Length: 139
Image (cartoon, rainbow, N blue to C red):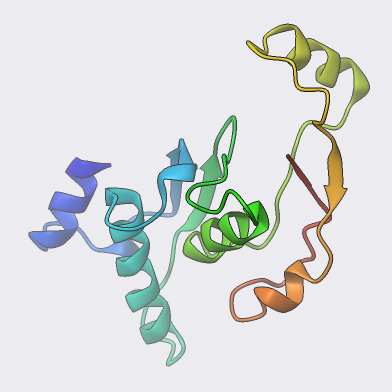
């Protein structure tokens, strides 16, 4: 991603030159991390797009764990920040019981308090960048 960011900075590429941007380990899309700087460039083009001047790539963010960042007391704030930074429209997660069981085999730690929770009002909190309601997040 740093190479892509360098190409954007040097004006060797434009955001509209790509159709899809896949960000692995997207939980790094915070502060001055290159992912977040790239998303700042994305948002600059998005503002231009409102006048019909530019085309944006589809953003796909992947992560094994969102973590909680510096929001240990309110982890939902971290999720909202990441989603807002990535111009998130939806969140998906492992749902099929067979796949959940497979995933659990690879966990290094087992937490008895892990559960799926409904995040009420996420769409409202993210209304400036979200069009779909994110139903569940895993803690």
